[in-house]
Image 1 (cartoon, rainbow, N blue to C red):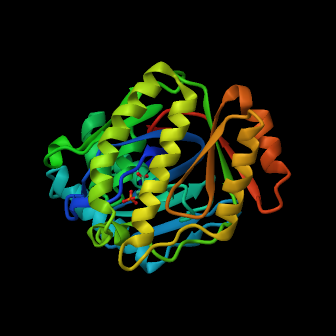
Image 2: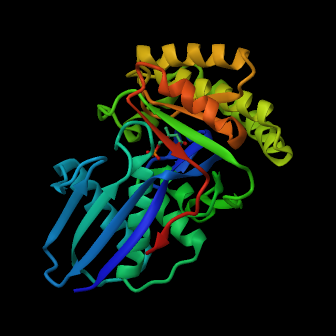
Length: 331
Ligand code: PMV
């Protein structure tokens, strides 16, 4: 029995991916840009089985001691990805498998757990089929998992996903190493509850929002501007653009049909408190993924102050501190 152990980080997008021009191929309507998260990782242990019908997915959730059997919905996604990977890798060979997946953070709570899992699985599947892929090929395969943002967890540090024209030109690449900028992402856990509607449903309905067309133009301007701020390490401008971007995506989410309200009252309350903190001269900016938990981004020099701000907030159940980190790797 062959065992493959891989690890992959979740990533937080500064420029978000929301909406697809091709659902089947998971081709996005705009470029996106993210940072890998050192404190939010998924370890996947992949055991290849000779019995082709033997397929199992076991999940050890955040702060849990035991593995539990995945839901039917989760197993369907893994089986679909197996078929996609087999096709992408041009192989006829079949095998069974037991996958054990362990998270260092809550899943389905706006911290990109599916990106971490499917990027890890892309590497595990390719190795199980005996293929050595380039980072570009791995990124494409991770994108095809259905969780498109998984393609941004493959490269190290900071990754840019070029929307591309077709499947071969839509992939993410590292544009800066983890050491490039000492940014910190403090994830303020306001709830560990799993969201009811996943992003894959949401991507399909973006054009029902009257704001989506505007976003598509505006995000191009913002992507250029944030690149300049990133090159100059101009944190103030970078943070302002990042917040603008989070709002832009969530306006679309809330105004598409059916609407997606990922925020809770606690999310808004913490944003208001953050604005007060900023007025005191402590620079931290927020972004929000598909969940109610807030990501506070600051530079290393502000970390202790931002952490004690979160420590004293009654709604914050937990804080996960993340630095930029390497991408998907074999352990
Ligand atoms: O990667 P998906 O298909 O699960 O889509 C999620 C996209 C967001 O997390 C909401 C935004 C992003 O770019 O990370």
